[in-house]
Length: 438
Ligand SMILES: Cc1cc2nc3c(=O)[nH]c(=O)nc-3n(C[C@H](O)[C@H](O)[C@H](O)COP(=O)(O)OP(=O)(O)OC[C@H]3O[C@@H](n4cnc5c(N)ncnc54)[C@H](O)[C@@H]3O)c2cc1C
Image 1 (tube, protein in one colour):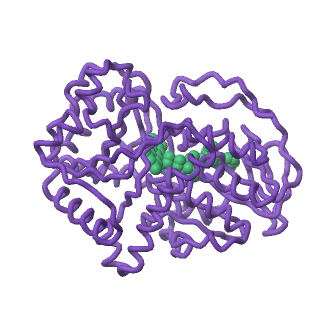
Image 2: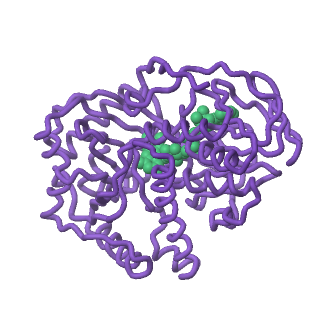
Image 3: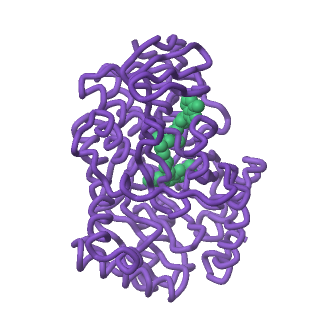
C-alpha cells in the first residue's frame, strides 16, 4: 500500500515539493528475490521499472533516501531537445546520417515525456508554448540562429528569431542582444510529473523500498545478489538509475560520470502585474552563456524560478540563495526587491563526450550522464533500458552504441569541475548577462 501522508519538508526542500511532497517513509522490507532490482527512484528508475513490470516481470525500486529525493524532483522542469553539441558540430564530426539520427532521438525523448503524461493521465502542467533562448553576445546569436536554421532544414524544427528590441516581449531585461523562440518545447512541474510516474509504477505492480541504500552488487546476470542496508535481494537483472548521485556501486560507471551541483531559487508570490513585467512571454528561458542562467514562471504563474552558478562549490546554501537572488535582480531589474522564498540544490551528471549514455556493463544495465536534459532523456533512456532488460528490439539507440569513455586517473571525484566552472564564468564575464554571475 502506498503511504498517503506526506513527510514534513526540510528547510532546503525544492519549491516543487510544496505541491508534491516526498511520500512518508514506507518502512517496507526489501523482498528476498525478484526479477529486476532498480537502484534509484528518479525518472530513469521509474521509467525502467514501469517498462519491466509491464513486460510481466517482478520489479523492486530501491532508493537510498525518500522516494524521488534526487534531481528528478529538483530540476527546472524544462523539456527540451537541446544539446551541448549543435547539429552542425555533430554533422561535421560524425556525418549527416548520424546527426539526423541523434536529433531524431532527442526529439523522440520530448515525445516520450508527452506520451507518458498522456498515457498515465498525469496532471503536471506540461506546456509546449515555446522555449526562449536569449543570447549574451552577437557571436552567440549568430551561432544559435545558424544552428537552428540547419535543424529546421533537416529536421523541420520550427523557430522564430527574436531581435534585440523584441527581447523585452519575452523577458524584462536589457542584457541580451537577441535570441530565438524554439516552438513545440516548454516545461512541466517536475514534482507532479515524478509523483504521477510513481503512482503509475505502483499501479503496474512495482514494489518500492525507500531509505535503503544499495551497498554492493555481486554475482552475474541471471543471478545477482544486491546487498542493501536492510538485507539482500537476489535477482536476474539490475538497473542503475543513480545519475548525479552515482557513487561506489559500479566503479566502471563512477569513472565515466562527472557529478556536479546545480542551484535554483523561487521568489515569493508576485502580483500578476509583476509577473507580466518580469516574464511577459511566460516561457521557459535559458541563455547562451557557457554557465547558463535559466528562468521560468512557476506553473501557477505566481513566482519566478531562477537557476545559475551551476557547478560552483556547494558551500553554504542560504548564501548561494542570496547570491542567486542578487543575480536575478541584476538580470531582471523589476525583481530587485523580490523576496527569496526557497533555495535548493541537486546533483546532475555530465560525461566526457557530453553525450548521455545507456548500456550494460558486466551484466548491469545503466542509463545516465544526461548533461542537463534528464527530464526528457531520463524518461526516454529509462524506458529504453527497461526494454533492453526485456530483450526487446525497441531498446536500440544511438546512445547505447557510442563508446563510453573515461579519462586516465579519473576515479569519479570531479576535482576539476570548479576549475571548468571558473573558466566558463571568465568567458561569460565578457558578455553583459554573463557578468551578472561575477
Ligand atoms: C537544479 C537542477 C535543474 C535541472 N534542470 C533540468 C531541466 O530543466 N531539464 C532537464 O531536462 N534536466 C534538468 N536537470 C537534470 C535532471 O533533473 C536529471 O538529469 C534527471 O532528473 C536525472 O534523473 P535520474 O532518475 O537519472 O536521477 P535522479 O533523479 O538524480 O535519481 C537518482 C536517485 O538515485 C538514488 N541513489 C543513489 N545511490 C543509491 C544507492 N546506492 N542506493 C539506492 N539509491 C541510490 C539517489 O538518492 C537519487 O534519488 C536539472 C537538475 C538540477 C539538479
